[in-house]
Image 1 (cartoon, rainbow, N blue to C red):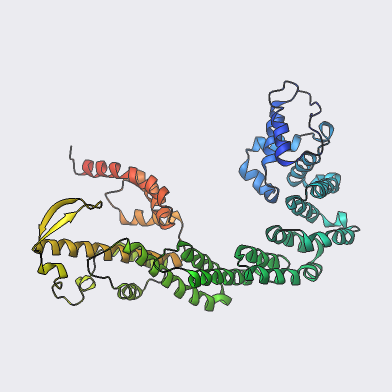
Image 2: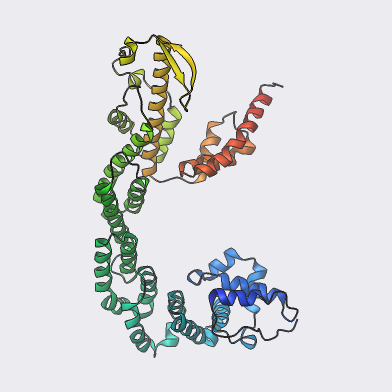
Amino acid sequence: MEQVQLTVPDGIFKGKLHAAIWQLQNKSDFDKQLIDDLLLILKMDLRQISEEMLRENYKPETVERFTKIDIIPITNNKELLARVLDIQIVLNRTLIGKHLKNVAGYYYDIFSIKEDFEYLVRYLAVIKQAKAIFSGQLTDIFDRLKPILVSKPSPYWLSRICFELTIVFGKEESQNLLKNLLEKRKAEYLSKREYQSAIWCVDGLQGIGVFNEQERHVQAALVLEQEADQIVAERQPNTYYPTLSNKLSAALNLVFDVQEGQEVKKRLIAKLEAARLDDIKMVAVGGAKISPEIDYDKLLETVNQMNINSFQDGWRTLLGIPVLTESLFNPSGAKPEPTFFDQFFDTYIRLSTKGKPIGTTKGDAAKMNEARLNAREILIILLKMIKNKMDIFGIPPEEFMLQNLVDIKSSFIPNSRLRIYARGLAAGFENDFLLSAHLLVPQLENSFRHVAELKKYR
């Protein structure tokens, strides 16, 4: 079908442009395949456009169609022109001399109208592809950008701009313009407790070459540590703060393998262990209890003696649970001390979770039930503590779980279901319990049937 002029005016962008193109789908004058391809292009994140992204996310025939769109004769809309020609240059660099300057100009014009920094970042990324074409204009471009960069971008967009700016204009020019500004803003954001904005300033400092990758990790970890310390300073008693452990874990992941961050790493591990112990205590309390108090410090000491120095160590330790010494549950070996209520009652009334009486138990049996419940609670806490240790070392890929299941040769898991079990276990260790349950629970019936068939049960 011969292409006709798109009835889309210049001066509309993003959502309005997408809506205008979408309305052309059912009009017989236009090539429906062309309209569908333009809608795909308008949905692309300008920050992600690259040949690798295009070939990974779109079918080869779709990518081929992108290269053949003759956009110039059918529209004067700057965003359509910029996006389509930009993609064609990315896929065929021989078009740089023909279209690159125009594409850069379109993106800058859109930025000037919209003041949307996504277009400015892409503008710099386009110039970066062939700086030689702009060699006589770079000084003028930099001078034009200076007042904009110093006053207007949000912390996030300034950090993105910094990475492009250094490549286009050089490290020295970029640092002279932005180093002091970013350091000052970082301090201001920290004083106002805007910690994510402070991290974006750290990213910007990396972008202009003040920090290398490892130094950036340490600086970002220090910001997260300061945020965690603020949570600790202001938290209320008997209140659960899940974000505390999350912040410390994120900080630890940043510096775990960074040589310059080992002192920070030791400090974070100590804070994280204390925070997670508090988490376990808070979850375990959950209401009034008359069972013996649990010695959390003793349990943590026990876990620390298990020599868990890697995720694999923790995995092997979990496989040994619950083969635990009796002294862990009752270190003295003595019989439980009589409770305050024993002097009044020789029979215990069992209550449901809603407080409804559901039966009675003689005194000795009640003590036995209490001991079992206490042992179960200790076991759950131990498992949580071991899992917390394992989290410090990061989560291995799904292949680790699969290989372990293959090595174990469990008759409970048929070979055809090994991959699903491995995926479900990996999700659980990544704390994605919803996905883990979704994958593993349906496998139980299949595993029971598999075992029954092996034992020749009907």
